[in-house]
Image (cartoon, rainbow, N blue to C red):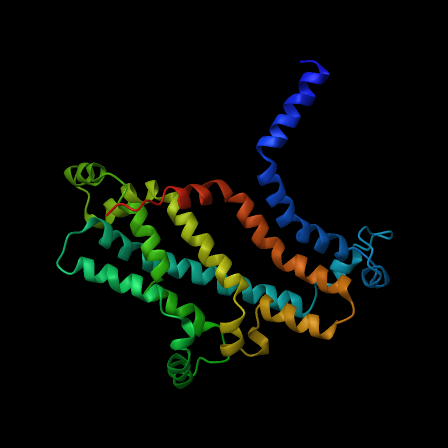
Length: 276
């Protein structure tokens, strides 16, 4: 292909994808600004420079230590256990709503959908009293343990995916002698990996970025990164380079997890049907 042909092809591609490119730049620009400011000196960060003249990668070492390590561990424990408990509790409920036919199934689905519409602030006070009487306030357990009782959004999303899987697969497994539990674990769930990945990532991201609930329940020893970065920002209110370095360290694990699981995540969201 000649140089002129390649140029015309590039211009055609740009014209077709102009909107997508503009949206991509709009979303990536703040991340680029954070990354560049994180490696500036404090004078450059306050001076309005867009490109670092003196690259200070030592800002990350200065930020990541002591409290930041503890906040990272707390966020990892909170997000990891919450995601695990959510999958253990929500998958059987979603499977039952999708595959079993029983009286009251429609009402149960309505209850699940209604729970999705209930703001968490409505139940905050009575739940806090319950956890305080159990002696668990000041820790992250009041946020982790409820996931053992299922998550309404995850149940609904999984149920919508499971109803799209043909029943013939489960029927064939039963003919071969599989019980209901083994059919779910060995036949249905392997085909539902995209949906499982989608709800797991949704839950992990929500817990990782959760600010309100850890602020209500946890003491300073159990603060997560969301609260820790806010307090770090208050303590370094003029050191924007350190604040941006802490922010970049906070969002980097989420970005890594998303890009590693991007394909299966997008597949799980797009293939979640509305059948049934």
